Length: 425
Image (cartoon, rainbow, N blue to C red; front, side, top):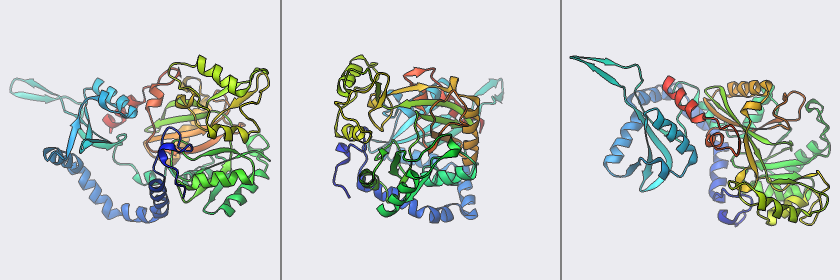
């Protein structure tokens, strides 16, 4: 296990995580999921859960712990450091909902409460209750209604489970598999490199592969453009730091889209691009980076040249001194978004109807009321049919704020859809 600290780990990027703890929890989660599903979702326990929800026990516990001053309720959305919660909070205030952040011994936990009181109109001695529903909820990350099959939450973030479920449902996914040993990873790598993907509209023989942990998010310890056994060994070792199981699969090309679905309905399609530029036939990659940084949008962070970028370029047969041909696109990192010098665009308005239908069918195949899919496709304005594309990940706790704050395109108020769902439940 590498001794590199998470704070300085180039594989973690801007979102460091403790490697040993991540490996333990992610690996244990995969190993114990079958047993946990048997224990947690039996009929008897289901009835107990129903009773606890009816008693709203979590709300009562919050009241007791607040009284004992073990926890504190923070009621200023500006002080909340989680942007996902902020957009939810802003929408809650518009609707007259009281929302607060729970602090445990002064530390935020990404746990919140929300309360909507039933309005009462007095008419003399009579009181007429307005139709607005009253609810009091405690939730982590994002609120979810009751009454659906919660078992999917245990496995939704598991990339191997997702691929199996989508293959059964006829959804597009990249070819590949999972490995516990380097020997198995090399076997999968060889199979992918020697295969021809006719059903996806292009030949994939000799194409690069991507290597990543079986569970996890934000692209941590993910390596793209893996073309040789030597590169595979390094990529496998990096992924193995965060999970005992490593995914090796074909690399799809195109922007990464985050399709967010609330209660089965598509609410946003955010395009994420890595830091990249287009060659002019004269300037080196290093010079082009300097030019791009000088002209970048204020919300976009500068592209940083580091060892990770040099290795990334080397896997493409390039270096900082390479001079790309005029019009030649050059990608600089596996990481996407403005935090790495990339871009984002809300493309819901231009998303092809076939693609919107595909996302909603995928949500129905999983059955959870809140899902964020990561989907790669070259052209979102054209039907996915005939394009080399696929689902690469599902997120049970998507960052809905991405749709509220795109660099380009029309923002989508996904938080409103979340509260609509909760108020209608």
